[in-house]
Each structure stands twice: as C-alpha cells, then as structure tokens.
Length: 468
Image 1 (tube, rainbow, N blue to C red):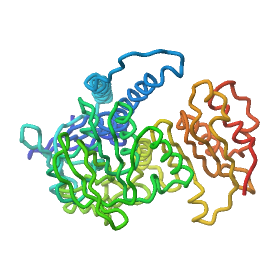
Image 2 (image 1 turned 60 degrees about the horizontal axis):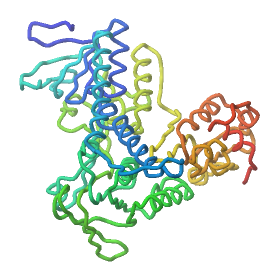
Image 3 (image 1 turned 45 degrees about the horizontal axis):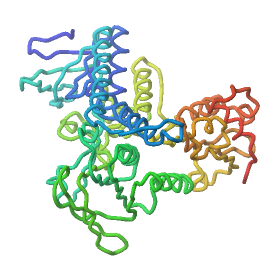
Image 4 (image 1 turned 90 degrees about the horizontal axis):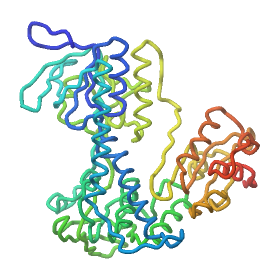
C-alpha cells in the first residue's frame, strides 16, 4: 500500500494511468523492485490487447481459418456435409480466452505487489490525480513519477448519420453473435482487412470502402496487388477512391452509405457497418493542461526520445504517446521508461518496428520496402521468390504469395524483408534476428535449416538472383 497524508492523499513512487501492455509491465517490474506502484484502469484489465484487440481478433480470425478449411475440405481428401457456422460459439471461445487472460493479469498484480485501482483518472494539480471510482466516490493519489498510458480508440469520422447508424467498431465486431448478411467496412487498413476476411469466411457478403486508389497504399505496389487479388478470389468486394458523404439507416438492420467516386454519386446498401478508419488518442478530459503536459497537433502526448512529456516526472507510453500502434512497441516503451527510471539512458530512436497483418495469408515486414528506399535515395538490390518456391507451402496447400528482401549492395546486409504468405510473421522473426546481428544475407543462404520447414524457404530466397 501507499503512504497516506492527513488529507487522505495517497502517495506512490509510481502512478500509471492505463493498464495496457507498457503500463502493466512497468508496474509489475517496478513493484518487484520494491517501488510502491499503482495502476489506474478505467475498464479493461490488461488494456485493449487481451480484451478487445490483438488477441481476441486473432482468436476470431483463427476460427475463420478453420471454417475456410472446412469449405476447402475436398482439396484435402475430406468430404463434408451441412457445415454451419455458430457465431455464438465463435464468440464464446473468444470470451473464454479473454477471461483466462484477465485472470493471468490479476495474478501478476497480486504476485508483484502492484496495486490495481479501477476508476477514471484526472489531473487536478501537477502530479496529483483524482480517481473517480465505479461507485462515483473519489480518491486522490500522487506519484513521484507518473506514466500516462491511456491508449487510443476507434475513430468515428464526422459523417452525417454515422452516429445515428450505431456502427460497429472492432470492439462490437468481436462480440457479434450472428453473421451479417452484408457487412460494409469503412477503411482498408489492418483492422478492416483482417475482419473483412474473417466475416467473409463465416459467410457474410463483404464490401470494403476506402478513399485510397489501392489497398495498403504505404506498401509496395506488388503487395497491394496481391492483397487485392486475395480479396477478389475470396469474394470480398472493394470500392476504392470512394469518399463517404452520409449514412442512412441503422447497422444490424439496413443501411445505405452514400459515396462520391470519380465525381459520381454512389449508394451502397448493406445490413451492417464496421468503421475501421483509424485511431484517436485517449487524451481528452484528463486535465493534462493542468499537469503541464502538452499534446501534438493530432492530440497525442508530446514526448522526447526518452518518452518524457513536457512536465517533469511525467512520462507517456504506448499508443497515446504517438508510438507506432503495436503491442510489441508498447512493450519496448516499457523497457525505455524502466531503464530511464533506474538511472540509465534509453531512447526510442532508431529501433526496429516489425509488423504483421493477420490476414490469411499474413503480411509481414521489417525494415525498408522498395517504396521507402526509393523515396529516400537508398541504394538497394532485391531478391524475390514466390511462396511456392518454399517447398513446405506445397505440403500445406498454402502456396499463395511471395517473399522479398532488400540488400545493401556494398555490405550485403539486409535492409528490409517483406513476406505475403503463410506464417509470414514467423519467417520475418528469423530475418529480423539476422538484421539485429548485422549479418550479411549470405549467412542465411549458407545456413543448414531443417527440411521441410517454412524457414528453409529463406535459403531459397537468399540464393536467388540479385536484381538492381
């Protein structure tokens, strides 16, 4: 427990607002070092990742993968009859996993000695926080150091009729107990594509609406083309260079999305609407201005390379600090702040930012792609093979896609790796380790790797011809 003064204010060595990935590990670690630490959490114990985002979505996506195997069963020599999708069972499997994860988190709070305080936090002085508890009572806490880790939420565009339509975000989509007849997805990013494919595999008609001229516009054109081909082959429709102007009706019943596309008006009719158009930082109504914590022009907390805010002894961590929106980056933010609190100098500058989008097949990348290399005038040579050249994919009937690597022509070091294929995220990990070690691509080319494994395909990739 914390110390408490005569006015009832409780004092801690470390106060963390938000129990997401970075915050919870920081609390557990510092508490085990003997610090008095408290985490203030408004709703989700453990943050969004184990409750409403990364892990639950991958749980649902895996159920969709299993469904796809059933519909492909004759390909594997297995006959099927009367396959049906029970969305309540799909949802309940996900809920069971989440319950188990929450229990693990509670056990970690208990074993570490960190305190978990459920409530909403608001600064009332520089380092004094008022916590409104679930019963509407309040507590005052202060901290020698304070860490803000409030995350982000789904952005709802300012679109006439959208709020009235009660659209789904990823939170509600993961709680569906029915299969939408026609799901319209606003946004063709990570969340939109992952859930679009999953719902299509459960049996929905799915249409993706995006304002960009191609899906995944930040990726190389061959990646975008491959993703668009995947959507077409799975029966996912997409409407590109489309700008929504209004929404009519209600999600879950019947609705119309009015669009402009190439100067023409288009009306798109569906039954359900999923909004996946980006993220908004949870930084409003917290009294940050009272604490002297400045925001960026996009509403994120302004931090330096050590994740310090503009207020002394107040730090920010994860998504709300403008860090790349990945759980693994939030975990690295924890390590940065942990080390700085312990008297070391640890910065975020120059760190690797791997990512994996969990469509089927997956899309994973580490380091540069061709688009970035060209834009920055970085010389490179490229190696590229189809996934079918990795013989393990043939045994799995998962030959779709390709992998490619950018090579520094003078040092032979790997500048970047992209894979659109089965288990792309796992394959990327091996390449990332080689990049961390500063190894030339020839080290993977000459490695002895077990046959037949997917990782063996890296030998094939790095034995292929270099192209300028």
